[in-house]
Length: 110
Image (cartoon, rainbow, N blue to C red; front, top):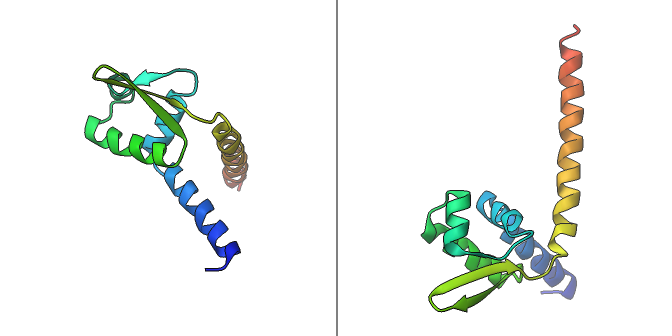
């Protein structure tokens, strides 16, 4: 595999780690806090087994980090730069929504 292809694969794999609603919700939940698995489950109404898989994937991608205190595992954002990735995506989606609303508004005029 050429080095450029490898770079694209690494980027694609990283973006895949974000490509699930539960993982995005977890990242947003952890934005300003450290939280235990139980706290995340309770707040996001997720199954613990599913959340554990998502957290494992996010940890492998280097997005979250964990620490254990007794039997409780706490998670936090490892690198806050992830929000520099997510913020422009939200801006693009808001722009698309405004454009769609404009088009739909014009449909009502005809």
